[in-house]
Length: 464
Ligand code: PMP
Image (cartoon, rainbow, N blue to C red; front, side):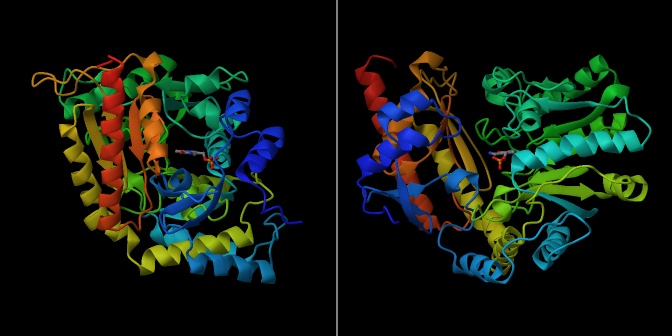
């Protein structure tokens, strides 16, 4: 019953009739029509009209090895033929799940020997909430319930994931956050720290955690969770002083430290995990996306020694898990993905070659009159759109948010065949880790063209 001979308009009409998209104004999209993506190869996508698009976002921060990798495709087909699914409940396991758990223990920082599998990053963070509270129950401190996250952090879209995150738009819908979740301000120098050095600001921002712990009562706080580099919040790279100080504060009060590695994990920042790049040692790590390069849904929690010891030795039954915890086909694809990352030295490629090159090319954009700040970490980068730059204030002034300047820029990205995301007036990329220098040059050419066209439109409308 193939319908592949439909026109784009026919696909859009069917989409509008039946498909409710994530994070979407349904009515607005139905009026406009979705863009239909029909195929992909390496770092490029094609839409149903045959337009070629450079995917500067790796799908949704996940297709780290790029599209069309035969070894992942074959791993899925082989596993599906042999054993497409079996569960891991009732004292059963499948071989790909066992093997993946082993490989994850090998590539994780010392002390991480155990993994709990989920189907997504959000489910991973729901697991974190239950596991952290279970840990403190077992330790005889059930009053330690509160988990502290950050404003503008993103930890998923389930009730617990969205609660841990600090997105005000999400909290406004559905009665969030759930009880015993608290937030501190994010370490965003451009917004909150321009009157001091980045290093001093990093210490100040970490200090907000200590203030919050003391305000809540240290004996009530169970854990702190953060993304090593905030992704969905706008690729906000914290100052180098931030995470070591967060670690010191968590240690001081005995609080568990959770690293949400859903975006940063598996090479994105130039190490296997973002916490290694940022210089801290978490007790728990959430992962998803890059573990399978997004070819198939898979996520989970890597459990460090401190928590594993208590859960395993004193635990009894942990009443938590999913149908797809340890899904054999998903695990087989992840194994092929991690094999590819290892054999082709992709993490080293990000750390030593392509990450520094992306950083260098992004820094050059600071000359542009619309760019007030650039930041990058491995294969993720951001630029802040501003006006009125002067030698005294090279970071310029923010545009009024209702002008939606980021959306103007994004319009030109679409028009020029580039996927670059707008987070307010911050334009961000997180391209596949296998990119070449020539492909980065191609992407930077497109970014410059989009910036110039945005500048042109703003100046013609008298908005500069
Ligand atoms: N944590 C982080 C840091 C994320 O970026 C995301 C997704 N963008 C999630 C959790 C949620 O993952 P998922 O969409 O797979 O549930």
